[in-house]
Length: 333
Image 1 (cartoon, one colour):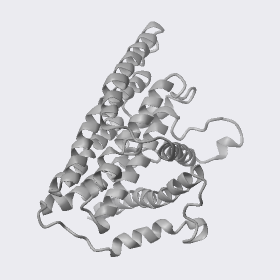
Image 2 (tube, helix red, strand yellow; image 1 turned 180 degrees about the vertical axis):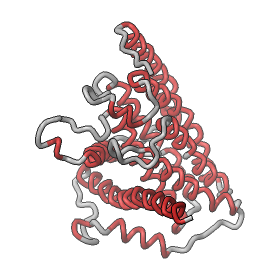
Image 3 (cartoon, helix red, strand yellow; image 1 turned 90 degrees about the vertical axis):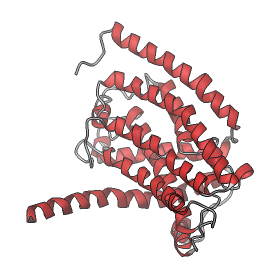
Image 4 (tube, one colour; image 1 turned 60 degrees about the vertical axis):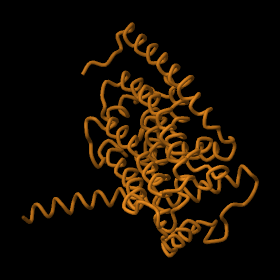
């Protein structure tokens, strides 16, 4: 009995050791997001609450905690409450398989990339549930847009991942990172990295693909009827998902925790710090896109996904597999 309790406490400790930094990171990247927008638009950004405005995210979180939660009388109350919980939970459980080094990963499963792909695909259900349960026109339109948006980019992401898996021969995320010790996949698969990055913007509802929550047409889209901590849970899930997509991009194309240069003093930097640095680099690119690129129209996103990304990624898949087969480079496991 005591041994079972020790195992349980050990697992809980590992989970908290992963989730607490992720939740703290979400608050910090909101600050970073605002600072990047301010830099691009030549304004100050958060700079009053705490040094350099670092406590602004904490102040916003306290505001959400103490604000009243209002549930529309005509809504489906159970699904209305479940929607932000589903969104936040799916965004957090995905981190279980992210390897921060060769030894530190919460769940080292053989089908890690498949697990990530499946869980990230389920994230759209929280948005659809929230939009439908609100029993309001604008949230419902945002939910419909989210469903259409998902089918536009999800297939392309799947084909992109197959390109990487052909080069590795394994669905394990640690194996994908270790296969890049000599050459990061961003070099031979650079077009796939670009498509993955753009698809990740759509996956996380970031501009120019923030159609489900477009304030210009839909007030706040699927979040219109939410307030207080329920609104904050959507916000938390969205930013945790953004960090997750940045970590996926780092692992699939940027060598994960691997150092860019295997010489002194770069080899002294702890492996997790390299992964965190690459995640931050990709996140800054996310922020720059939001500050620079105007929003796409609904039909433009559908055209981009089905008529450009999908055919191109399929053609690149054929080229990759043909090259590996011709030079006898296909991995054998």
